[in-house]
Length: 508
Image (tube, rainbow, N blue to C red; front, side, top):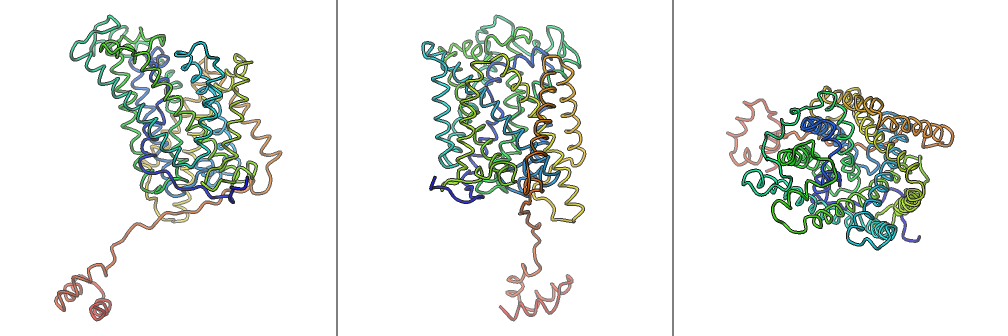
């Protein structure tokens, strides 16, 4: 392909608007619109505590990632940070685990897209829609990164409007007494009825964490945008700091409203609370509106998954831990081979999913759960190693330091470690731990058996941290020069250098 350029030619085409909305929409998936019913059934209304704890952890993870991204704004992101600060095998493990996670999630989303389109066109074979969406999203990702960012902006906007409308509509049903389609009384009493606020006790809240934490998967893509953001030092901190508000608004407030309208033990996932709320407001075609929203959510997820996996593969190639061809880009700065590889893998994966659904899809879905928490844990470990190196080398202080260091970092590690233990304890998710252990063993065999040269060395990253601005003494010179000798005397009284100010006055 004659339009290719040498490695390292990704273009900074993502604006503040693109990244802000990617941050707002990255963790909003189809699960929220269908009620997060599994987590609610596990913990009852106390699931709100699990979402707040999970939200606090992912905020600390994102701030740790943000501190590293502002210091080293590269598209390889946490894969290259792990290689640089933990070791080359850690970078290999993190990069390939995240890439495979994105493949699994994208596979689930393209399959879901076919199901959603079948709601309107039941006579059309599902594979037709899957093939169509894979090629359309591939075309978007082969265009410039600005096209990707623009599409994600509009996808996120639709999802955000839908959630805000659901919250406002739910509050209207509660406050103004509009017809409640569930037939139940509305109000805060529903949060403590049917067994109390925590009907399944502390264990129910802990068990729901395995579901809740996975719901926040996808927020890491903000770190990957660092290599293509127009001004990463400005836009990344602003986007990452929006995480707490997003968690509180999009999850905690939305689920609170839902459970105030409908008792928690009646939310079984068969009927979407979104549809129930809009039906109660007398809005015809609520099911069609929901279908538009979940299709948008699926398209957004597929788009972001292919983008993130492609950039991570690009970073792995730069590290010498993936085929070097993956580092080549088009003239518009797109790593085209990584996108095409992801598309090809998706098409193969869809066929495997159709032919061997029960055997294949269960295992890779379990691996996605494991991969999410492993990537977050590696981000925190890389951040801790970076902070230790900054202190040891007396490097410039970070421009976007993570809060509550070091306590926050280690508490977040502890919660993620607890989630990994819970995955192994809970029978329904135990397979994820087994499959995850096998995955790590396979990666270790590949790394130590086949990776050579640069792939065995730590990634070298450029530190773009700037010194903290200090107002120089000469900043007051223009005023001093205008005021003449008296101003110079005042400066001398303040302890400034006589000679320096006299030379400055002469130069004026």
